[in-house]
Image 1 (tube, rainbow, N blue to C red):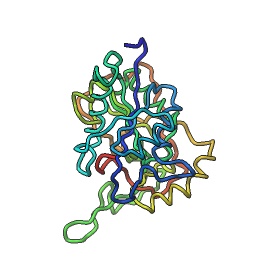
Image 2 (tube, rainbow, N blue to C red):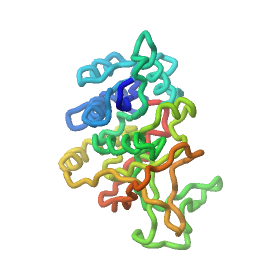
Image 3 (cartoon, one colour):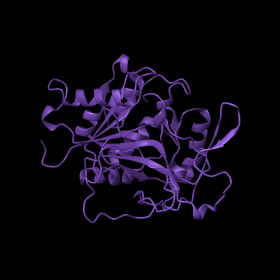
Length: 294
């Protein structure tokens, strides 16, 4: 194995899509969604290889044209009910198979990107990968800060407050932010991922990304929103660098990413920067992470 840890990015991009036919090949600012994800991964300094897992010939051709390697996904893993994890584990098996891959250079870290998030940045990926490589986290996920008051509808049709006391309306600046999973990317330690067979294991941390870039394309309205935002997002050179979510305050804590038994310990002296102030909130959709395999 190489003297330095090997990091592989996998982008699952199946051909079937109910909301937007051919979604992964739709364009935002002149580039297809799958090409945008590949470009971000290839621009990241920490990522050694970029792989697209797909069952579609057109997606495979597009991915090859912009420098990605292809793993052909079997039909059984390309349906609406297949999980993202199943596609990722299959790709890892292909990459480490003595007949099809590089068994002597099995990746240590996996970066899972979703093509439906068109504004992922290379520096965000590098920062998240570094936190896994240095032993501080086993899994890091992209999340956007939120101060939203969340409600749900009860069986009788009445509205029920979920994350707040409906009788108390504190100012935004007096509320600790919560963080919503964007679905844009996940960085995991491969050994732990193979053992757990899901992306949230060990010590889970957040890679806080700006809310304005946290667009997940699930339907035509999302695609139109991304197209409208693209000139603003891509011209914005003042976007804050990715950071780590702060430790919970003594006051009522913000929602935390799911965690299980810790298998890694934060590196000594690691900085604990404050969360970004989220100057560009927008009503982007919640996440592709709750949908089937991309």
